[in-house]
Length: 233
Ligand SMILES: [Fe+2]
Image (cartoon, rainbow, N blue to C red; front, side, top):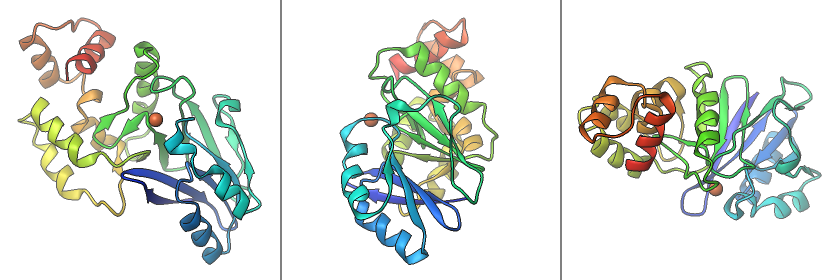
């Protein structure tokens, strides 16, 4: 199983997850580039779907379906744990991750996860649903994946997020090499590295707890610490 990233719009990222013969398109905002890539590799795109129903993620659905024989699957019809078949490879597992929107999903491959607007490289999505507890649980699910899991997000917000992370944790040395490793042509990070730099996943670290203490913010439970980080920073 392999994955190819496609940049479109100002900072959106879409993906083809593919095996030897077939592919699943996720957030296909670059339908022409995706179709070209697939035809050059002689792969047939079988499924077109989305991480959630925000328009910047769904805008390429019709165009890609028209150009290929792919079947569109409305992401709101998926259930947690469902596996999307890739025929000649291990399937892609649907993880329900409500929070950014209530219909937000992530797709777990054999060594990567496509995270949409739930988890970005160096930041997290906005909790537009207002259900912060669900968002917290969703992020905890992702944080529990193996550390070497590659995080493929729905936008490239890396540079702005790192500037902000530096304001929140100015003494975090890991922000420097993470910034050096940034490649705008292939935006990805390891989950274990997110735990080192992404302030919104660092609610249990002594440095973040110290920051919350300085600001006299609720920090007793893990969820309180997460909420405080989300609300203040
Ligand atoms: Fe979104």
